[in-house]
Image (tube, rainbow, N blue to C red; front, side, top):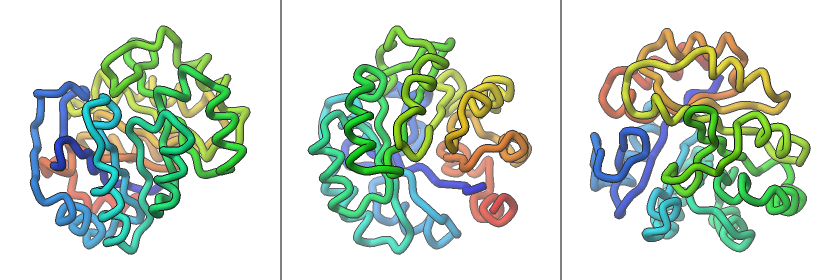
Length: 236
């Protein structure tokens, strides 16, 4: 199981929000490139970058993402506000290994069908859920669609797999909801990356046992609740 560090960018800074809500920053670091280098030095096999400004339609950090990709030796998967084929294409052109699509995937399955045909096996669909409703636009709105129908509708396409986030526990450092994670992984034969709520190594062990391909860690590694270097070694 890959243990992947998250690097969320807002206003040109590395941040960690509680439940994705602006104004709840628990972490703000100006040196974004320094953060990316740190995770690589500590053993990351991949970096997970999210452009929060793009996701919330308040800006764009694409040039910074390009700098990160150019600086690192490890692959980068990136998401946040990828709602056109042109934007996805640009991210692949600047060197992204995989692109993550959430809002547009949920609202327009035909977009994913087209994108997956052009970039087979390189598109990750983000399913960000709260109370079994899939959220969109940087988790600011409900799509009105349930988790199960979204997964069943989109898994038929040639996507890499899914990124599942339980928004209700995201950034709160109170542990995962094992039954929801297990239920999601059991929905699909595609690989699943799990995000949200990780607080201890025991959380990681549970998710590995459930069959997760990877986990994305944010608040837990920025606050030191989980020792990233140790977690990479233990769960690799």
